[in-house]
Length: 603
Image (tube, rainbow, N blue to C red):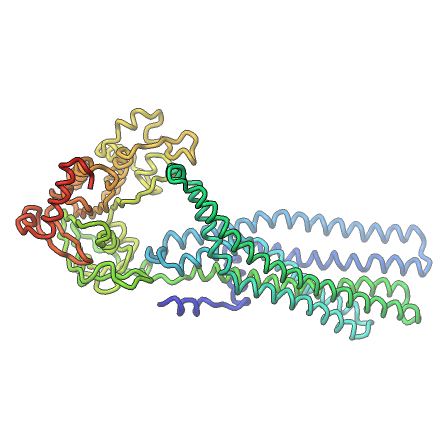
């Protein structure tokens, strides 16, 4: 499915978005909707008390009611008002917590989508744009909270309009028409402004994303040295300022439109209320209505106009929030192709073989393929090395093996079956992988090894022992329960490069998956240290299918078979000795690299 088709199918009307949102809320937290309904009824009841109190008092005064009767009337209305307002305040207070839960659910849904979507989607610009708009417009932008106030005001407005029509039945119909038309003028102006903001959202979304990335860069401890040594501070500030100016310019144009819409709204209010009040005063002076009716109608006309304005204004706001929720919906429904619940179960066998059959892969937006027509078989228990210079396509190949990508052409087979037929999450469970860019979680050392909700303490201890990090653990007061990363935990420990590598080894040993993938995790180490660590992995993973990726050819000499990737394809394969005897590309690269090592220069 291409980007245009996806975008076309992701368009929803405001009604569809609000219906989706209400259904989703009812499923997760029914009380939120029930509270809104109660608040609608209370809002209308309070408004009615407000217009009937003055009219009732004027009527009693006109007909000569005693002071005691007036006091009782006022106390009765006041008591009802206090009770209604108390209930309303309680509902509003309790509603905030419930609405925040809906926001938390939405954040969890977004996290779930990001963590479980096809890995390739994370590298697609269309997915990143959809995610950015969902977070910026809905989660950070407040639509998930503000929309409930809109629902309440809109619902109260609809109910209030019908009630006030009954109250104002004594007034000439043109009063209704005048109130409705003047309200519509202001609301239409506001709606056009909201449409402009929505249609031009990308004008601030892109620089907004850059601003967040730049801000994140400036805070990263790993960049602190580069910022100073390469005088990057001025460049980053200029880049930040340039993008801030783009956002500021967009918002300035939007605020000008907001101001014009506000002016139009204020003018229509002046026209509506001025003409209506003059008309009512004329009716009273001519004797067509009594003073108490005048007071009632005077308040009712203002209330009716307010309800009409609320209905139209809140509809505009609901439309805006509905469009924003549509952003969230488009993100959550962004298409995935990997099978999960509907995928076949992985067969339970003693060993697994992998095969890449006529595999090519082309990244989205790229003109050329990263790899082309790869044919490779990996036997159960085999130790395979995939070597080649940087940029040869080794990492792409690994991600295809792991099922993170699906081939553009060809197929990846597990025991002769296309992996696209399997439940992809179950397929992932077959692999333990250590990539060149690995992450340490801001948690305990034990949690970093386990990375699961269940824990087998014996296995954790054994994995740490085999990986050789017991020396470090013995120096820490809390051992495996020591926290990592000082930015999150004040007592957090920092590991050296070698200690981090051994932690990754412990993680791989703990998972104990049948297939081990090492994608140049030791690239930052010197060749001797890398070779020693690879040999350690090989020793501790006996009997398991293992794939070792490296651009240093000497590090993988121990492997059963070596595959050299060059110019996007398999150039040579065999054992180290066989490839050296061929005196081809592998032998040439090995000789060049070994020459640099002998001269003391790391290649």
